Length: 326
Image 1 (cartoon, rainbow, N blue to C red):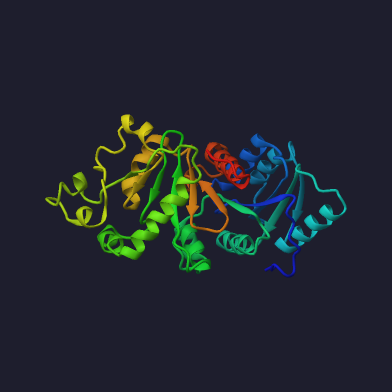
Image 2: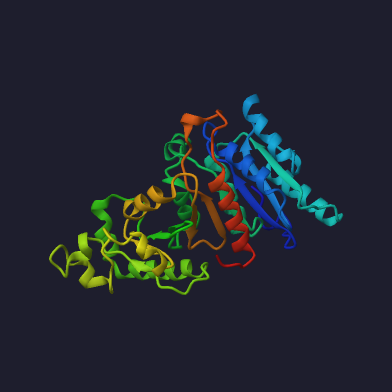
């Protein structure tokens, strides 16, 4: 793997890693459709992580990129980065280039490699296509999703899942853990303090100065202790979760802070669907966005996948890299 010592850092162009996700999912399709729709972006160089073993039908998706970009294919990350440096030094670098990485490693390893390269500031940011938790396990890794990979690389960072939508956004105070353990996790004052620091960080990406809505853990936010004491002990002015996401509440808040995974993601995905919304990881030292949908193996290679979420993920990534608010 390249290191910060072996690869010279370049700041003029923002180097964005895009991992396409599982080989048998729609990641390559939505990524190529998104890049074909967006076209070159000023001072951005895209490094596309995908499988070297794609079949002929999947190969047709690459032609969508070729209509807008000059595509250079490499079989290692290091060779692509070296060539990037050569182009930059000779004044030949152009935003219309795609650095296409045809790799024999598994999708989980693409994310691990890209995360380390972002950590060493060789890449500026990362966008992820969908990867399945079972696929990661089959590759021999213990991680639960992308967030599990990031937590392994940054064990001292408190990382939280955020979701940006057209009508409302959410942040999860806890994510991939059993509901039975949520209250114990949140009752740790040190952890809860980290949650609110994460919420403040998430707030910083929005133009709006409106407050976020803090959801209660229990029904009716505990009903003043009748349905649970957690809210009285740890939360200030929590909102009843059963009514929080009513349409009338959307304009009042910049986002909703959900206590656990399904409490926030069910209403978010019910409203925004699978074809919109962007997942962002809060607490990383670099910008990371991804699609808000899974691998959709059932429509693999059918040319039916909607690239809207990937388009949004790339656009948001670039905006945040440029210091813009949304």
